[in-house]
Length: 325
Image (cartoon, rainbow, N blue to C red; front, side):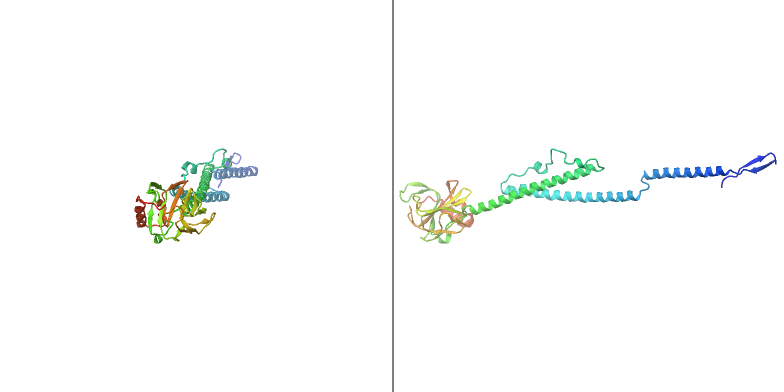
């Protein structure tokens, strides 16, 4: 309650109650309302600029920011998982696949390199969380580049694997006459006695003694480049070009089972043992050439002989006996 004020009236010699004027009363009410409004407005401004009170819009924005932070954490974990998987693939690529196929490993700096030149992330600058956004974008770009490099590397490995498969199929890797059909392994690669001159002479092939008509098989995939008797000493003979610098020759045949230009696979029947040309008895003279040079065929029989059979062949092949041609 407001205080009641009095004044002394000398005429009546008594105290009289002071009655406020209506105008002053209204003025006081107006000042009170104005002061209260001003105080309320200033209080509202203060509260809006502190964390004590949030508007519905601010609350919505806070929830949105929290959701973005959660999404970013999930994205960060996914990127980390992708980086770990990529690192594992890259390690196997460099240390297993490329090593096996004799390809140079891809340097680490090439796989992890960023992007030079212009600023690719200028449009992401100027925001509250620009550093985080730019860092994440750069990280994604590097991951994408790693995936492109790895994809190209695997394409290269696939091509090398296909070539390796063709190479392994082309190498003359089996014995051209079956062991069951052999009478004996007559002569190996090296210095031998010539059956006609009795002089010591370099024998650049292997002689397999077998009855006339014994089947002869292609020792690797390739193309028949010759099937004739127009080469001195060989009689009826076949030459197969296997590619990759390899060529195999089969001499002293009785007849052919293939013709010039025909493609053959390893194990295909190509002819039959005979005694044509410069030959002392029915046998197959077999040669392997690499880049035009005659090499020892015994090094290529991994595709058809057991360890024991190979050991026996090696023993006979190293004997300095008389060749049959």
